[in-house]
Image (cartoon, rainbow, N blue to C red):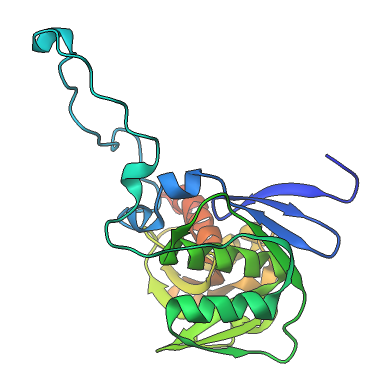
Length: 247
């Protein structure tokens, strides 16, 4: 990869980060795997053997020699019927505030932009996507640029990720599920066997130290991070919090 570029995966998207410009590449996979379908998963780890699909159909020869049906174009059947598609293709460096205005039009929500929100990002998408997919991609782009959203009713506030934990984040409880999103959330995780402070110390090597708080009176962790990162942390906690770990 060229000097000055780095590549990694964020929230299911391929992200290329330049020195001053953040670029989010959304491939056709975004169309083939709608985020609404992902949210149906009841647990963090779907586990093996849970994949469902249509039953095998008889071949053309088994049906009296009829010619096989014409293959359906990949991704065409995954677009929810009746949903309006929007473009999130911003191939040139675009002011974050201009993209925020476009998102406000898609969502119909009022947006409050913090005074320190600035910079340019690129969002490259070969196809139009649903409004929900566009919004999730927007959250990923904001996260790369160091910002996130805080929603209250029909109002969206754009704030720095470093200060968002003190705002009105969505709160989830339990250790077996968290939403798939690049929006910041707060997850309350009660522990059964291992001490919260031990887990906090262990996880501090993997996540920002200020994103996890250990509450000793109830042996509970309070995690504030993106939904995707919280899901990863929950998987690790599941492996650590097992019988026999008491001191």
